[in-house]
Amino acid sequence: KQVVNEVREKTGRKPLDWSGFTENENGGTDGNDVEYICNVDNEIVELQEKAAELKQSSDFYDGIRELMEELGGVKILSSSACEQEEDGFTLTLKLLGSHLLDIRLKKSSSVGGGESLFVASAKLTTPTTFPMPESQPETMTEDTENLTETINQSLSNVSLSKIMSQKQTVSIVIPPLDDLVKWSRSLESSQGIRFVLVETMARIRTLDARVAELTHLRQNYAAQVYDIETNLESAQFGGAEQEVVCAINEGITVALRLTVDCPLVPGSVYISELFGVGGWEEEKLAALKKVVEERRCKGPVEVMEVMVKEIRRRRHEEGWAIPLTPSLPRGRKE
Image (cartoon, rainbow, N blue to C red; front, side):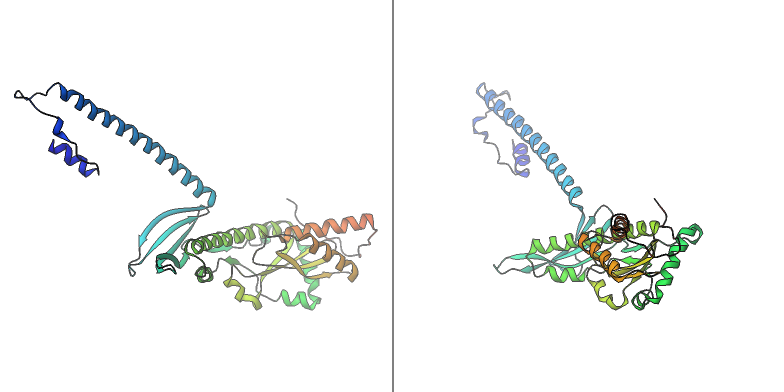
């Protein structure tokens, strides 16, 4: 009896009432005690059934949690106490399946008198540099070389010459997350943590898509990518803006400004300079630029495709005469 009650107390259950259970002189039990034992057995069976139900519920909710982690792009890997601070801890998260983020949370007194958590720091521990695709001279064809020559002829334009005097981009880097941490402190606890996670993933997605977009652009057009030296401070807010100079075989060189949201947000790329080689009329160039602006393109590839289609349409429908320039191929096709 004592052993049974000790086990029940350790598991958080009340001890059994043995007052109705008596032993006879031969060590057996009275007939009335058989019913009491059956009741105990029934209780054990009932507890086993409840345990099985709880196990099924636990498995179900674990499955839902894993699904939400996969859909949301955030998975908690570990939690550890801060060595130097007793009122905080560090969460290690996996973002988008490959990026690791250490986010340190600290306790603070809230307005209502209770305690809440705020983001003290956040840092990506996996590589934050996206290398730019390099041009491969050994694979350059006559098509690409002619398009590159078109770009070189555009150096007579002062604005384009200034753009092309900047440093060419060799990599794109996810900047430190200090600005996100600072802004998160103006929000409530849960909203601040959510803000840092959502914005960090947005930066990763944007810059990852940027590299893919520029790779596609270089595969189809002669394109040069530049860091904007006069706007390096923008690198603190999601990634530096860039400028891309491209050429099409109709004898037009285009300078495009890529904002920090390019190529995921409509209108995040726009034409900064448009120069026609061989005598293009300014009115026609302005008309092309207006069409591109109205389309609110997401990336440079879309801009170039829109411009080429518009030139073809106007040449066919409006009789546009394209200035006589050397026959330059449009670029390598996919």
